[in-house]
Length: 252
Image (cartoon, rainbow, N blue to C red; front, side):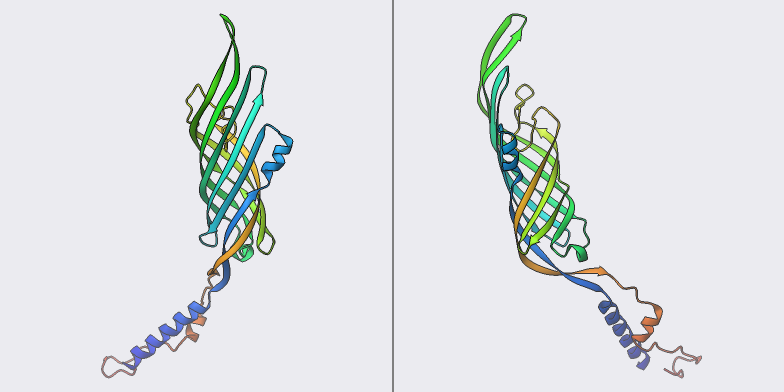
């Protein structure tokens, strides 16, 4: 019985040594809400396009965040053969994966990639459509019609804390069109929240300034220490081997 007790105590001490050997850090989990300042900048360069976006995210753990956002877009253009307008509201939901190690990231930095699903509710109209065919030249109008389109996007990007409570960062959006919701013959010149409605892919960029609010702290293991055999012996005395031929007469 004495040998069993000594062996049990040794296991307990060894277990305690293993637990304290973990290298850990405290990482804050944050809630963020921000505004895309790239939209107004692009509007100054291209008067045909108006785009305002806002987004929010919440850290689920040290490397994964849930993301949601919305964007209002309107587009108008006048070409030789048509005058066209579209406008709509886009909703985005998805997740971001941070590839920076927790010790470096420390709740302040992000370099990773996200996956988003976008759903846009929009209307389009053409007040002038001019066409030429074998029977001559004519004109028509396309009254306002409303549709719902959707797409997927990958968003590689970076983010950094500018000062406490404020972060800045940019995302590149690589979009894949699922459907415009308008049919083959009414594809929008511009699909709000997406881009060229006649193309299967589109790209865009955004630059967010966000307010950051920590809501929780977690402990993250960053480097489990490998306990050697010598370190195991320190934890407690190991039971000596029974040198007697009889279990009753042996020395414990």
